[in-house]
Image (cartoon, rainbow, N blue to C red; front, side, top):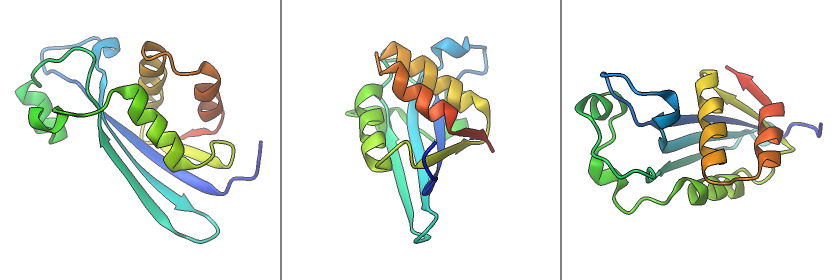
Amino acid sequence: MADVKQFIFFDFEMLCSNKGMPFEDMEAIRLGAVKYNIETEDIGFFDRYIQPTKRVSLSRFCKELTGIKDTDLVGASNFKNVFEDFLTWIGGIKKSRFFSWSTSDLSRLKIDAAKHEISLATIKKIEQRYVDF
């Protein structure tokens, strides 16, 4: 693995319900991340809403839990476009170490990437550099 030059902390907000919902159906609706450059100590931010494939109104529970409103998703890009923008913002997977607050974010990435036909090799590279913070 290449020398790590930056840390990427990422977090997905997902569709949710207090009435139960299979994890596979809990599509990402927001991707937020912080990039910390180890050498310069510069900090960057990424924050994008994601249009779910099934356009449904968010449950009251989901709105309260995530702070996301239905209007936030109007005009949002799909997962594939947001993820491509995220990769551009990162500027290089090989020089990055990825963190999230639970493995559910990595699982969500894998499921949504497969659903949107994102390269498995790209996801594997992130997974190899991933730490459950």
